Image (tube, rainbow, N blue to C red; front, top):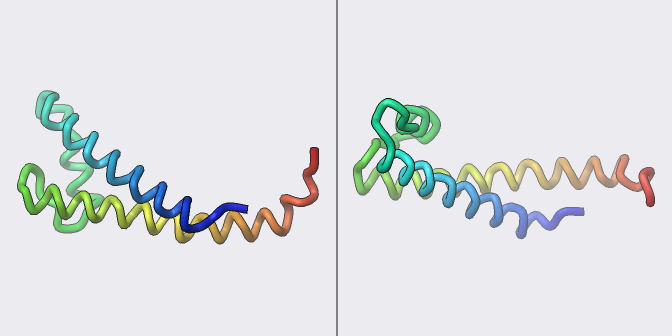
Length: 89
């Protein structure tokens, strides 16, 4: 069984950290291989290389991670209760 609080916070922090790495990658690589178009499509109201856009993207990334945790953990726990007990070592 997964703990929803731990998984949700972990995924939120992971998504925010990944966003920061994507921005750093975009700053150190040539524009032809930037990920800013992807980020602008996935994160509503995100604009590349603005202070407001950066913090908005950071918050939105964190919230996407939270969303994934809140949806994934109950599904996993339900399936684990239903089918997980049958597989024992």
